[in-house]
Length: 310
Image (cartoon, rainbow, N blue to C red; front, top):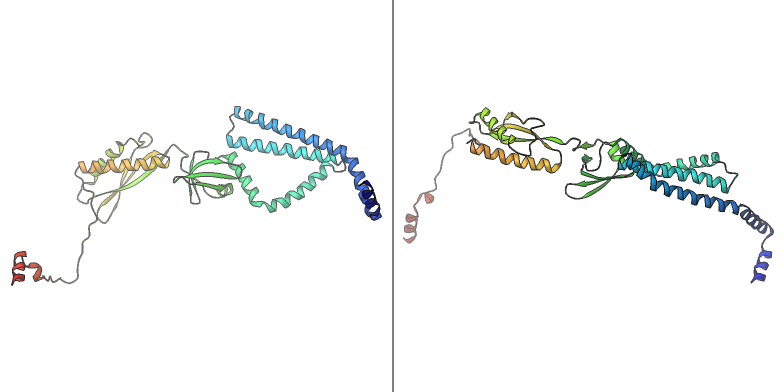
């Protein structure tokens, strides 16, 4: 076997043989440096593990928000790996200075940036969202036809649980570049219904009955602001009142309070004898109408039976 390898080696062209010998000599000359570089990378890995273990505890004690903690840990980890990799490269190849490595990294970073533009855009948007925190976990938000409760905010995307139970995972850039409605920015939110009473009813009396009914609902937060009731318009068959009150800001709070307010107002108006009218239609004709009667319909049932018997 050794004779075959020796013969194969001797049969190689001289330039190729010289080049392979140069590679072998070069590899053995840099092998100690490569081993030292790998050892240093193992040391960097240990430092990263230690930082990932200690830093969350320190940030938690400092009461830093969870999303911001993740950003800080990620940035510190990436910085340590970047700095350690540059040192490892200079250890393995002394001719490569940190300045040259940074220059090469910058050129490569520009190329990677163009290739993964959307990924970096979402990443930076996620960092800014976590730092500024316009909305947080458990908030109810609406943005670009997406409405629901925020379950998780990551570096790349935001998880929104819609009221029908479906989970929407949307890129952070969408929430950063578009208007976002935060429905739970406050503990209370105003809601409105329209209530109509007949034209024959007393407007002031109807307004007072509606106001007392709304104030009596436990879901109405009249301690924040009082119930507001305004006569809004002369509708087709009723005078419409705009009934406004404050309640909890969650969607379930809005729906629940509307249900209770509608029931209470209907009950109070019925008890007070105030009519909630159906739509009325008055029909007018340009010419007098002639009425034609059907003789068969005018006959009594007995007469019709006698006629049939005959």
